[in-house]
Length: 311
Image (cartoon, rainbow, N blue to C red; front, side, top):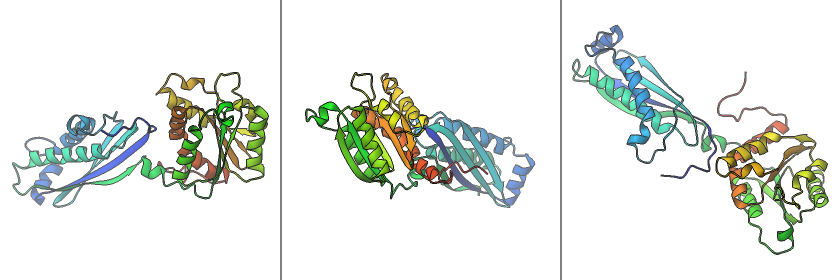
């Protein structure tokens, strides 16, 4: 199986379609609810829900998913039943296979209930119609043109006693998503130095995203959150709340991060922990939302949200 533990939990949806061919007289029996074995459409609807909830038991590399909703719609013509099954789940991986398994189960049970009446009945195909909520949707949000800076706050790294790994990880992830990483610097755990560097980057160098790493814990030299008092004009607490919540599912120590996030002018500042594990978890949790935040900073709306926009 693929490890999906690093992914964030989002609303995942998928719709699959199956098409059943039969004689016109057979479909008249379906409409009239006079099929000898019973109401095949309602039995198909029940089987679709059952199949969607049991995919992980039959498809070996599919992850167990808590299904939130399964909806089955039928569209009938003179010689055809179109079966559309939509599946919703709030999870870390998509529900495409669940939707296709549900459409398959619904069409198979309808086939089974009609075959005694019609030896021509057939299932013409099963295909995915749409999906949303996964990496493909969220990665459509384009951060190109956004200048970013990575600030490593560490006495030991600035003194040359340790090698920076967390800042490099942040830089790698930002470049991978399309940011222009224009600044990278290591500074000691000094409140004034941290604050002046962030101010210079945003006010003078037109850096629009500053991500700091380090200095967010309980140590006597952990001053990064206090440095933000001289920098942040508007708080954005949801960013670091999301990072801590995501991390807390993986380690009991995420709650100890005191990092902050906020807006200064046209720039966004995000404090991340100093450990590489903490940085990786936090970036996974917040980067897509941070990218979308720049559209809002520029006066835009939520058109990039695959769930749709508010009317």
